[in-house]
Image 1 (cartoon, rainbow, N blue to C red):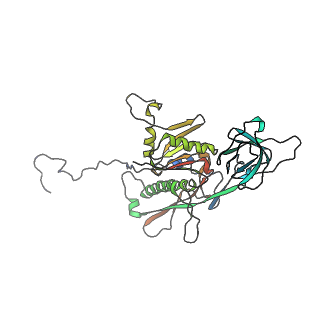
Image 2: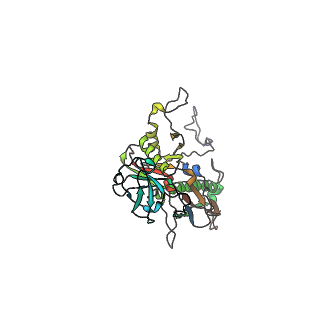
Length: 377
């Protein structure tokens, strides 16, 4: 053993020094899943008991149409785009003129209505092709027989369940040794895999496309992009334009016109920054005098249209979504919510599987809205 002369220092005396390590592991990897937090993991209307989850949709009879051709002032006929929604004795409005329908074909396609112009002494006027035709209401004569029955066919939509799976494998020795911040390596890895699978579900709920399962092809669930990219939803595509308040108001109005009442604005950080910059001097702020900044946590379009602003790092950078929570939900196949189970033991190790089988419902697509193609820089 070597002799040491003179002063001793920590940088030279390293043998036997006790390590000063926190009994805690720090990780800043994102763990948030805002859409799941917003809706909950078991929020479908009905339990999910099959790999194909279906829901039924219905709607009231439409009350608007459009002229299919110009109509002269005082005309006794009106060409409309779709005649299947009109009944005899309906009062319709074109511009400022009221007209009473005297005969209406039952055909659903373009047709000619026979009308009595200037109903109720309203001013007769011409109407241009494409002008809105609004059904104000019916006006039956006393003692008249019931008119034509008109109703809408119910429709169904559906989604498939998707299996989210991960494996954990830890050697016997790794599980046995003491570690800082980890009581059990196996349990620690299971916890991390559960977090990762929940985020996979979150990302799939946004970006996923529906796939029917078959031999060699796993089933997959559709997400918001899949369901809100149809003719039944409100999609506003821009050409690399900055996110403006007018865009948001227009899309909100489109949803409202279709009967929706969106309550959530979900967007990524960049578009949230754009939103925070709108009329910053008009944003109501309750802050201490030592805090600077501009934060928007809610947006009120009208008295009855109030939307919470939710950041989601997994949203497309060029998109903003308007959502109505009551028409969205997650659901696990019965007994298949996220769980862990040990696999058969082989060798000196502990193996397990983390698994969950989920689907998502997106009802009433027209109640939601999607802005795409926004500037991202």
